[in-house]
Length: 124
Image 1: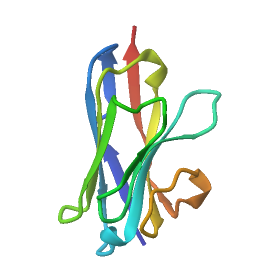
Image 2: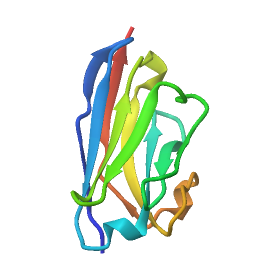
Image 3: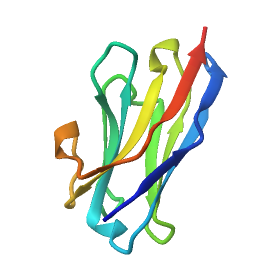
């Protein structure tokens, strides 16, 4: 069993930055690929960024490439999402997810565990 707890969301002006964190419980964090997804009102949950279990290989949605960076610290059971140059269209609830296995996953159905979500609001 893995529990995920996100933090770091908030309100920021367009062009600003935020850093999200996702702390995981359990001893097998390094066995899971991790991902961040987001869901805006009236829209489906969509993939944002992911990272392999080793932390070597990230994967990004085209909409955030060059602006968002994912990293993980397996010693601290934590994954981070650095978001720069934020746009109003980035406004959503951001969810941390874990999928057993080594590689990035981009489909929400492949996640084994989800966090409760953290709100990110970007004002214009």
